[in-house]
Each structure stands twice: as C-alpha cells, then as structure tokens.
Image (cartoon, rainbow, N blue to C red):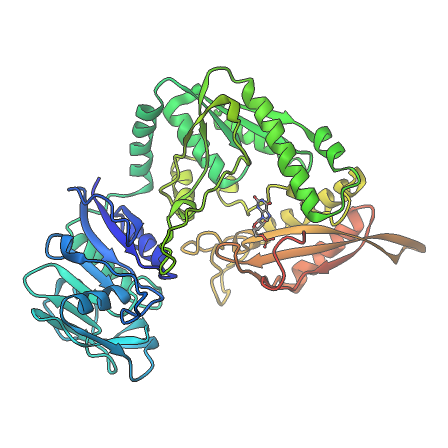
Length: 530
Ligand code: XMP
C-alpha cells in the first residue's frame, strides 16, 4: 500500500498532519525523526513536521536529509522548512517581528504544483520565532506574506518543498488543498484509503495473521472494543471469543442492552456477571484511589478466570488505537517514550497469548467511520466515553446498593433526556456539531456533548415535598465539551432542559431532593469527580 511518512520533530500538531493526509484518503504513518523507517517503494513522499525547537538551538533535533532529499518528494513544514534551509546553505535567524497567528499568503510562483488552486491572499497560520533570511542555492520563493518573504519555497529540479506556515491547522483556510497537492499531485498517491478499503485489507491481513487460531477479546461497550470485535468477527467468525464483564456498577440496563446489541451483531460473546464480587470487594471502601484499585484488580481477576475457560486460545485482541501507539519524538531528551494501552487492564499471563490490535493504525474518528461502514448502529458508535470503574467513581464515598439504584435512576433520566433533546432545528442560528466527529452536525444534545453523566453526592439535605419534610441526597449533573478528555469545559445546557431534567429526577427518583449543575472546567477540576 502506498504511503506518506511524516517525520516528527516534536510539534504539538504533528498528529494533525497525519489526520489531514488520511482525510484526503491517503495512508500515512508518523515516526520520530531519529527513527526513519525503511523507505521502500511503498513510500511515496516524506513530510517534516514542526518542532518546539529553533534550528539555531544547539539541542535542536538534527537530521541528515541526504537519503531523502532529491530522491523522494519532500515537504518541510515550519521547523521542517527551516531545517531544509539551514542544512542546505540557507540562513535562519530570529524573526525581527512577531510571526504567530493569521497572515495572508501571496503566491509568487503561479506554476508551482504545491499551491495549485490555492487562491491568492488566502489566510494561513504562522507559528514560529525564527525566519529564513536567505534561501539555499538552487531554490526559489513560491509564496510570501507581507512580513515573511520565504513563506513557501521550493528546490529547483527536484520535488522538495517547504512552507514556514502550518497547512495542517484549520486556520490555514486552504491547508488541506496544499497537503492534497503534495500527496496526490507531487507524490502521485491516489486517494484510496477509505473506511471500506481499510475493512477489506484488514480482514485479509487478520485472516493471514491469525489463521484458525482462537482469539479472546474484552468487550467494554465502548466504541474501540466494539469496532475491533466486529472487524475480527468478519475476519475469523466464531473463533473470536468475546468477554463482557458486568461489574455491577454499570448504567441502568446497560449490561442487558449492550449484550443484546452484541448478539444482534452476531458476536460470540459471554457475559461474566461479577456484580456480587465487585460489590462485596467495595464494601466499606471510601477512598477514590482504593476504589479504583479494587475495581481494577477485581476486573483483571474476573476477566482472567473467564479467559482461562476458552481452551486453546492463542491471541488476545485489544482495541488500541493510533494515538496510543505513536511513538512521540522525545526531542532533546535523547530517548523516545512509547505509551502503552491495555484496555482489558491486564493480560492472562499464564496463557502466553500473543497480542493482536486491529485498530492500531486508526485515529478515533477513523475508528468511528470504520464502525459505521461495518454496519454498527449509531447508538453504539456515538456513545460518550465511560470510565472503566463505571458508576463506582460517580458515587462519591462508599458504594451501596441503595445509592447505586438512586444514581442509576437519575443518570437514566438525564441521559435519555440528552438523547431526546433535538438540536439544529430549522431556523436555529448556529449549527451545533458532533463533539466526537466535528465534521458532522449533531442532531441531539447528546451528540453535541463530549461526555455527560450524573454524580451522587454523599450528603443529605432538607427539602419539602407536599407537606412532608424530606432529608435526601443531591445529584450533580456533569456535561463537558472536549476533544480528547485531557482538557474540558462545562457545556452550556439550555435552561429549559435543565429545568425539565431537575424536575423529572426529583419527582421520579426516590431519595433525591436536589439537583445541581457542575460548572467547572478541567483543569483545575477533572471530568469525573473521583
Ligand atoms: P478525568 O476525570 O481524569 O477523566 O478528567 C478524563 C477521561 O477519562 C475517563 N476516565 C477513565 N477511563 N478508566 C477509564 O477507562 C478510568 O479509570 C478512568 N478515569 C477517568 C473519564 O471518564 C474521561 O473521559
């Protein structure tokens, strides 16, 4: 399969370059600048990313580009463009004036393929403290801004291009066109990387890799494990053995509903109902960390015991996705760090299983697209993230059966109301987009919100219902916007919506007489309360 290689020099937005190129329909991989993969004939071009460093810094990441430049199409972005200038006889100096943010691009070489169909004076996004003050011999400027003469340049007689701005960010209005010109017109790639082509090639590759072996997979009800399961099921059918652990802390009817959907999808799945085990382990535990540890350990024990029943299994499948496996370029630190992700919490070591990760090359939005092309229902594809410890960390303090029942009732009313509340009705001024897939308009509040849930607080307060005094619990509602869960802000729920949900919860859930809305951002708060 033809591909583009992106060499990462540590920029915050390197992953965006990858996502934009994938959106064009061309497969690409991100590698640290100091671990260049084999450049075989499948590699059609190379992109050099930005970096937090200046090329003039003694610790700046250095790379001899002779094995690429002039041999394969090459595009340097920001630091990448300055590295090209610096390495090949140009001059890079500290900028005299600020070069951050919006600028307008004047195209000076109208014949240059890189800027084909990019209108003159279009907005670009700059973010650098250095600038190129003289170009390497044998190169010429193809576009400038009022402040930066060499905003874009190319080497003559070879397919090497450089832009000091960031075509990968949305603020560069025609950035996608510039990247498309590079990967399709200059590198000659065809836009054939689609969800459907991914499914087709993965199914063939998984069959080849796994053969007639048995595979175990932990299903959580979340998007990644579900898509991984359906893909594997398509490849190896009933040799895929899925395990769903009911930890007794799930949402109202969740275990039942999720198991029904899995069976509808034809998955070979067992539900390990360990509710009693979890609840007894959690008895009297109030500290958030101890609760998390107890839930995590019990999960591993239950999962392993269930996995041991599957005789002769050779593989453990995981729903690992690309952001978890991209090796980050640890610029300046000398070594690279790999983030590992085990979404089943621990492996049954005694079984000596090999790992298969069918989604490890996909970004989250691509996982959703693949899921949709596999026919998985939107309710499952569009589900909000839900923490492994489940409602266990949304009952503050000790978990009891009574509190679980109260929280389940309140959470169901809240979540259902979010799913039913329509947005983007005709005549509404702004279009609300899906939090999980910003390229799609949201149809309900649920879709517009990144994550929502109810929390049961461990205090009781006085209220009055009818003529009766009550002394009941408080429910806090949480709804946030986010792109990755790392930072988040509270979502401005409509007042009428809040009024309806508060009223429904207090009237219908026995044991609750107060509802609050959490208006804290992350940081300094977190999304979950424990
Ligand atoms: P916080 O509370 O740290 O959460 O702002 C960020 C995101 O991570 C989820 N979360 C978890 N997910 N196991 C998980 O699988 C956990 O222990 C866990 N704790 C938090 C949280 O729901 C949010 O999406």
